[in-house]
Image (cartoon, rainbow, N blue to C red; front, side):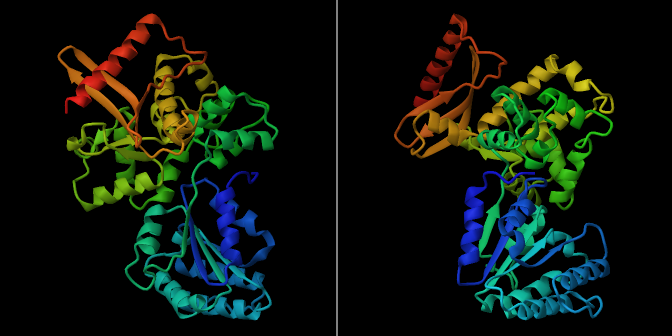
Amino acid sequence: MILIARDEERRLLEECYRARKPEFIVVYGRRRVGKTYLVRETFKDRFSFVFTGYAGVTTARQLARFNVALNEYGLRDTGAPKDWYDAFDRLKQLIIQNSEQQKKVILLDEMPWMDTKRSEFISALEGFWNGWASAREDILLIACGSATSWITKKLFANRGGLHNRVTRRIRLKPFPLGECEQYFQAREMVFERPQILEAFMVFGGIPYYLDQLHESMSIAQNIDALCFSANGALIDEYDALYSSLFDRPERYIAIVESLASKRRGLTREEIITASKIADGGTLTKTLKDLEQCGFIRRFDEFGNRRNGAVFQLIDPFTLFYLQKMRGAARAQSGNWLNDINSGSTHAWAGYAFEIACLWHIDQIKQKLGIAGVATNISTWRCQTEQGGAQIDLVIDRADGIINLCEMKHSNKPYLITKDYAQTLQQKRALFYSVTNNR
């Protein structure tokens, strides 16, 4: 995989490297978004120590592998540490031993996997940072992980010894369309912009997913090979994705599956009914985690805030899996190519295109010439005796102007007929009439 873009994240990491103070950085984001690759490519041979946690193994096995890593970086082998306190004491010995290095860069990758049951990992980490590392201006500690719920609870919202100890947070997001294009160009893959959009509508700008695409096939052929063939790399990705990010992933899956069938989104009350998850703090946390990871967005319908926030699914791969992959004959090659012009595929494409637009609000504002104007983003819908109307995107501007946007997916230039133009005018008139009479 080629490291492209990520300019701001690399700048921040380099700034922390040059800083004459201790830094505790957390790099987080969803599975496959390129967290480890970003850190490793930024620092390359400047690491003082790197350890990657192992999923689903015992504390003893984690500590044994930690000892191997210590030995590889130059510490004399004295056997596996007896616990994490001992492990971090040995890490201190290694760092002191390598005192000639200007900045000691320590990467603890997949940190949530190290925190096995009754391991006291967090307490040992607290002792390492508070009792030693935070007093040294030459320490740069980087924690990486996909398990957002663990990172939020144990690092960001810690009420013990690690409270407010994280100095920098880097949330790594998927590539937008422009960076997807840069990525394909860097790999010398010749895809036209409609194909790049098609890839985004399925894979959502996740670097690992894009890295699976083969230059000898069209995007449609790649989708068929990755998502529907027996040995496709993404056949089981959906379950692995949510399991890697969240404790008790069933709650999160229940919510996104409820939202996938409701293009307009659902209120909190509607989510409770659809997902069968009880109201309360657990639901609040689950929704917040999903929003933080970029799976859903929270917004208020324009002029209708009394009904509360609306939550909408905005993760392309989740939508594609639920609407096209799940229940399909996935092990049958050619499934996607044979289904590409079906009614269900056109319905999916309309929703997926809206999601692509929502991921690019900043770019849309730039094209409208309002990049520097503060805005609120929402939707609007209204039901009257004469019928209903819905506006896909409402950009409410601080300068008193409101942009009403319609989002339509088409494989060719979209023709605005006389009838359709009249429909748009009627929507605008109804919007003006209703919102100005409230």
